Each structure stands twice: as structure tokens, then as C-alpha cells.
Length: 263
Image 1 (cartoon, one colour):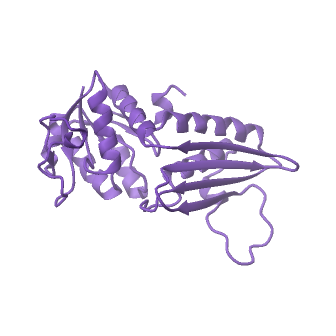
Image 2 (cartoon, one colour):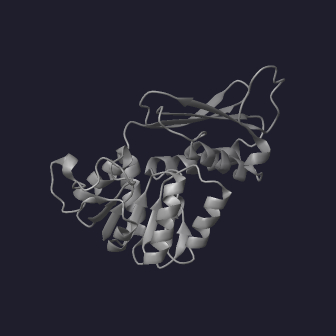
Image 3 (tube, helix red, strand yellow):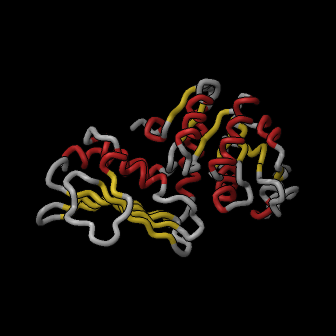
């Protein structure tokens, strides 16, 4: 299966390239980066001491050399790549977060022409955690206050993280309510007592934290914590390759990692 990687010079891009190069059933055939990126024109596997013959390019036409593009860039870049994938009939795995409603609508529309796996977190462990949160929320649906905590590196530009939002959405859905109606995004000053049934969010940005997420179910006399901590981006990369394999042979459709994993 032929794979293209977007953001090839970045931390996640390199992790994806390394994962593809180590797989037996996937082949790197295109590597993209933005115009002016310092690694343009260099071999995509050069940082591994390997010669893949695939040069990093800013030309979107390179996408047509692949069966699937994996993208963990920024919303604006991902939407450009999405349009190119539709043009060339190439499936897409989207791990980018921070899309607005218009961006999400564009992804949904594109899925009528190509196969797309779109998820805020591609980690198998995170998606298992989401399943556990759904179960916990259905059991702990009264008498418990819920808080979602997340921490990421200082370079992350959106907050709360897409994973934290997905955790909140999972709990809200289990309760039969829209997240926006029960979420508390900030607390400052005299906030008064906590409202029953709300979901609070807390965010840390600093250093090189790959990604920590904990959901607290705080009851009277007890506290349940469900956590996932990433020590590297390898889990995201492996989950992304699993998503790409899932799309093989699919001509169109919009899927998430819960579907990919059969959850």
C-alpha cells in the first residue's frame, strides 16, 4: 500500500515516516511539507540514515503517487491536502485537530468521494480509554462531578486538545446531552458553587509533554480517575497506519478510530 505523509519535516511527520519504513506492507511514495521548509528537496528518510528515493516536496500533485495520505498538520493545511486528495482520488487519514465547523463540514463532504478516517487521536490506547469513559459515564450518571484534565507541549496551538474534547463529547453523549450545553471551559474569580451535571476542562501547556489526559469522576467519599499518558508519538503513528490499512479498498466514507478498532 502506497503512503504519503504530510508535514514530513515535523516531529509527527518523521515518526510516521519511520513507522512506514519499518512496516512490511506499506511503502512511502510521497512526503509533503510547506513552501520554504528547510528540508525541501532532501530525502524523506535521510534523518534515519536511509535513502528512500522519496524527496520532500511542496507540490500537492505528489499526492497522486499514493493510495492514502496521512496528515497531522494544521487545519488550513489539512483542508488543502483534502482538496488534493479528492482531486486525485486518494484516501486520507486525518489526525489534525482544531477544525472549526466549516472545516468539519468540508471533511464530511469530501468523504462522499474518498475514504477518510478522521479522529482527534489515533492512539489505540486513547480509543480504548474513550470506550472505558463511555461505560463509566453510563454507570456514574448521577452524584458525580466530571473534570477533564489535559497537558501538552508548549508548541500546541489549540486548547483544549482534540482528545480532551472527544473525551468530554463521549461523556456528554452517554448522558444524552450536547457538550456545549454542559461544558465549563474556564474558571476565574467568584464562580459560585459548581453546577450539577457540568463537565469542567483544565489545560496545561509546557515543555515537551507529548500528551496527558485524565478524567475525574468525583463523588461523595470517592474519586474515579481514568487516565492515558503518552511517552512518545509512536502510539499515534501505529494507530495511523492501522487506520490507513482499514481504508484499503474503500472508495468513500467517513470513519473514526472506534470503527477502525471495532469498538
